[in-house]
Amino acid sequence: MSSRRRDMTGHRARSNAPLGAAPTHARAATSLRDNLARDERKSMQLCKQVQHAIEDALAGFDDEVLRSLMVIRVDPAPNSGRLMVTLCPMAHLDEVNLDAVMALVEGVKGDLRMEVGFQIHRKRIPELTFRLAEAWEMAP
View 1: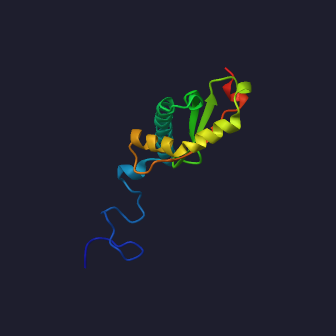
View 2: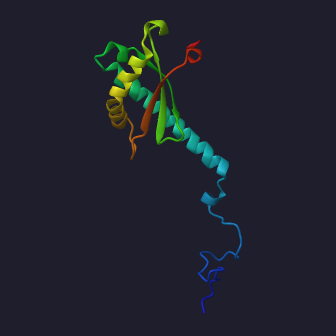
View 3: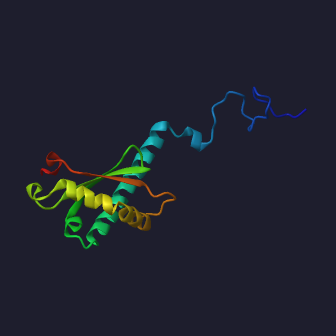
């Protein structure tokens, strides 16, 4: 018979360590907190890249309203597979028809996502959802 030990299921143990001993390789030693911090950092990095890509794309449109939009922030919603883009019109809010602005943005949503895909290098391009900033979010 083999000198290797068998685990409870009858399979050979992968190391010479006694059964039930904690794994010694580095990956198992990383804590859940470290993994969550890394994932959050990567999500924020993606959000910043998407923000720059959308700003560049909006500046390239012929429509004056689209060019006047400013990206306030991009957040994971609920994760990095779907991102919430918060926009703010540069003109005073009393002068802007917010429904018309959202209709314009929804009309070019596919173009914006395509531009994001060109500028970031990911296997899957995140889905984009848009909203206009509330008045309290724009106050200095």
